[in-house]
Image (tube, rainbow, N blue to C red):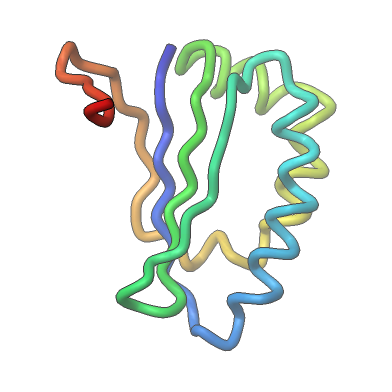
Length: 103
């Protein structure tokens, strides 16, 4: 499993359309057998800053499987206007440092 993080910085006025377009794009992620889960988070300190987290079965499944599948074209079409606002897009491996809330 690999985690992809994509950081966007866009004008705050674009936020409603961005979230709507990503909701549409998310249907392609949900349909992909390579995507385990995803979440889009909005920065509470700076309007227009978002991080998308996607857990893929592997980096190869993301880059070769998803991007060559029938799910990629509609995903890209939905988010294409925001690609220039990507500040970072990287894959990360999990470490042994994990935890949860004290119960």
